Length: 383
Image 1 (cartoon, rainbow, N blue to C red):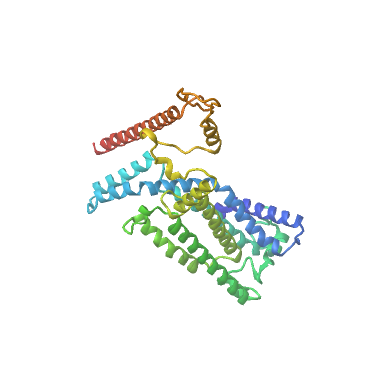
Image 2 (image 1 turned 90 degrees about the vertical axis):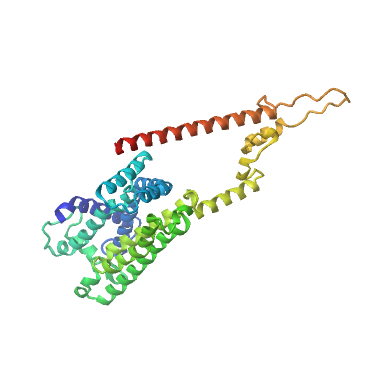
């Protein structure tokens, strides 16, 4: 196993050593100590920063899957009760064509987790190799920058008395087995709690209402993950070293922060977080004296749609609508008032209306073209 993971173990060793060197340069003590614990935290942060593009891709895939949920349910209903091989194959082909037409994949949401698994196991094997390297019993004299002296420093570094290389299954091999067991149990409990919180956060705040149908297979799977995934920590946590548990827990806290930022700034349309954000934006617009978003569909004089204006455009409109009063009485009819853009209110409203209608026509044309292409693909597959 180490043969396949060696390149990753080598990279991780250099990242940990580099973070440790930076911390000691900032004043932390060299040798064994908290700097090596924080080097694992730094490793987690660096890995998570590197996979941010994958996280963005995962977010887009999840949004696309939520939008496609009604279409997927239609396909499943179409083939409900048909267990023959041909029907199952056609159902799968139609679903994959649906994903392909919308530029997404059901596996895109799993990419960050799949990328992290080799890193996770490489760290596990690296910490497993620390003790043999420190004792001179490893198949190599060093692993990247981790030679015998550095390995001894890592082996003697502890978290609340529990060595980073220890685990519940190997607690009896260390001088303070009780410390190892207690620290490991606390870390596992925190891991379960943070994972449950992050899953619950998605389900309660960032899922559209139409996706929360109890009969929706995707929603059922989300519920199974909510209660099933933390149990994986319960059964597997005793095997992994304290250092690996620190990496895992740090990753969970990173997930919570990343999800909180996403839900706050870019929530899924139709979700509870989206409605709360829209309400907050409306309140801000009203406080600034701007019309709320609901006035987008308000109908003005002559049946023409009135669009909200930005701050600069509102100021120009107010200046353009100011009347120039003639100081001498006159029986002449008032002249048409034109704004700074050279247009009257009626002409300005007409241009907005025409622009809006042109945008709608382009949008409808794109939808019709996409639907026509989907129908052609479906006829080809059925043939």
